[in-house]
Image 1 (cartoon, helix red, strand yellow):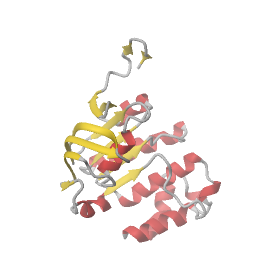
Image 2 (image 1 turned 30 degrees about the vertical axis):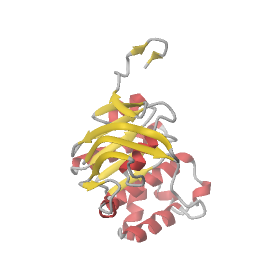
Image 3 (image 1 turned 180 degrees about the horizontal axis):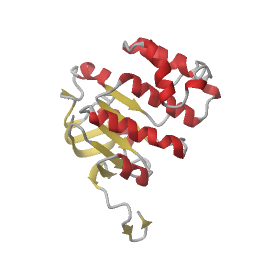
Image 4 (image 1 turned 180 degrees about the vertical axis):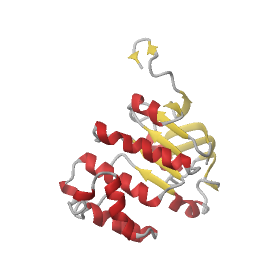
Length: 223
């Protein structure tokens, strides 16, 4: 699903990712932790084909990153960023119907997707009158509609109450059971450990095996 070797990425001429290597197989979910500004969101944008590598080689869903081949795989990638990608003046249902028309997904499935995330009764509510958690669930409904092969999530549990947090795990499981893969960025290590198969730590622009969540790091406390 993903093969990165010696990847480097700069954003506005500032090096962010350096000599990064990552392999994610079919049916696998990988978590990524790291300090603020470590490059986690940049990594997701790279995998979503929104950024091109400055050095190294990388492939996602069989296509070379930074090449014209990426146009072929973009419809099969589902990205939920740190901030909701919703039009504030449109209702939840209108946002999803608009997205369906852009991507060729059956518009009639919008109602069922909103029901699946607990928003069926709020379908006609404008986004600017929705809580952060409702907006997050609406984006999860978008993933349900598109059934991506590669799922990329940036702090997916943010704003969700305890009862809704399981939606994220269920959607990750669905993607992996269909033979896809997921990369999940989160500061919430406890939830990450439940949702993914392994966790990596992004430090100094590169990925490293993460310490066990109960490991005490000198000078840093419980980690």
